[in-house]
Length: 440
Figure 1 (cartoon, helix red, strand yellow):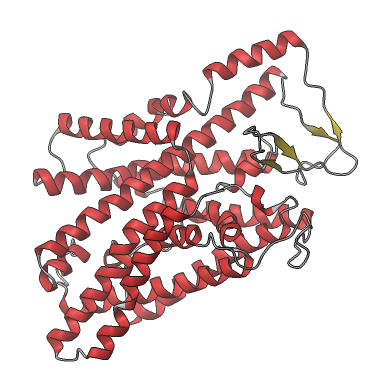
Figure 2 (cartoon, rainbow, N blue to C red; figure 1 turned 120 degrees about the vertical axis):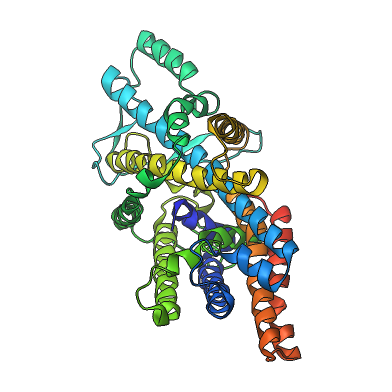
């Protein structure tokens, strides 16, 4: 699990409550099946002594050079999408964290509600009006009062600060000062030591959502369309959710390497199933609980759920700071994998020298900054990345590898072929549908 956890409530809003939960379970089951097929094919045709053996090697052996190239290219697509998403999120977390510290140090705070619990804070919403304006709607809790915004001179200083500290323009560029030095290591071994932070971040997000949701209570109405809390069970914008889930469950390009570390190889299928069940349950809980309890209209739910909370909310401040540190350690690792694969494909070695590495990293950074400034839509990027890479790695290659393996064993039948070819059709439909739905 990764940053797509933050988008699970938004995914349910796009598909409707029941439709979203069914997609979470259905896509999880489909991804489990195709991932298991990759492991099964590797057990029969893979090389046990080759530590680098992965899907591209199986494709070359069973399908040909074209399939190997396809696997390598779309593995790059996944990694590129990941570094772009991480840069957008790091910019967001950095902006809000520094903004909070600035407000606390200077004593200038945004308009906030007083006399409310530090835990049970309100949520906010940006809704596009008919005039094209985007007003801020805040859910005020009973008994709360609004704090004074401050004197004019202080507010003028605040405006000057935000000219130089702006999420839409310069913060993604400032992030270069932190990340550029971390991207030029010859080995990423140091960053693998922080992998446990991923588990801690998932645990914190789970606690965060349960605490907030317990304060809101149940705010759901599936019958009265005029109710503020009305939620249809199904929505036609569900492809946005299926595209996002394709990336959320994506692990196909490294699953062989991961399962090689299993002490009891005969338990790979069981352990993989347990993992997918636990991930599916976590996605369902985080998405479902937040969605059902969210106190404003459901269309207010952001693709990054933390954006629904006030910047001065203590638990949100802690979440952003924690996730920022986690991504700072994960980003160099993913960028290293992306750079190594590109260098291996085009230059024949993973470390071609300091200058080429600097140039490639500079290209990565420029691409990430451009997306963070001009298309900082977390949900858009993950759903398109998931749909594009999922078509190849989830829906197509595992099926072709499985059928090729059966053919070599003399077990391939027309019925098996027909049933399995439905899976790539689903993947193609998922990708095409992304162009006909919006994120709003």
